[in-house]
View 1 (cartoon, helix red, strand yellow):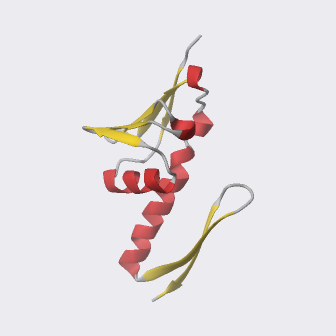
View 2 (view 1 turned 90 degrees about the horizontal axis):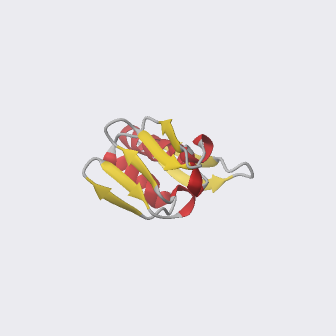
View 3 (view 1 turned 135 degrees about the vertical axis):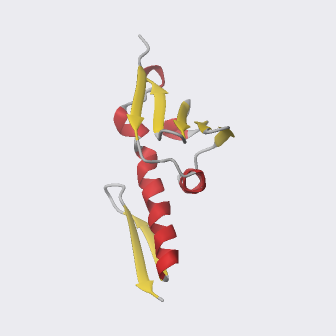
Length: 108
């Protein structure tokens, strides 16, 4: 039986959301204040830019955990934006064994 799965996030900045989706290599469509994801683990999900809510369906294997996948890419985009504002330069990006994003940086 299909079950609607939802998770709340702070993903409400359209520019940062698009940057995060591109970094995660997720194909998407934007219709108004909603982003529909068409590839990867987030295929058949939607993100409301008004509320930050990501919605999926258990029939597509969605869980609260994998719906939160976009959070790490959004956090990275948000951090990079703050770095630029403060004159900090990102030198290197790595992903460790746990799947965490590690950024190497220095002050300009």
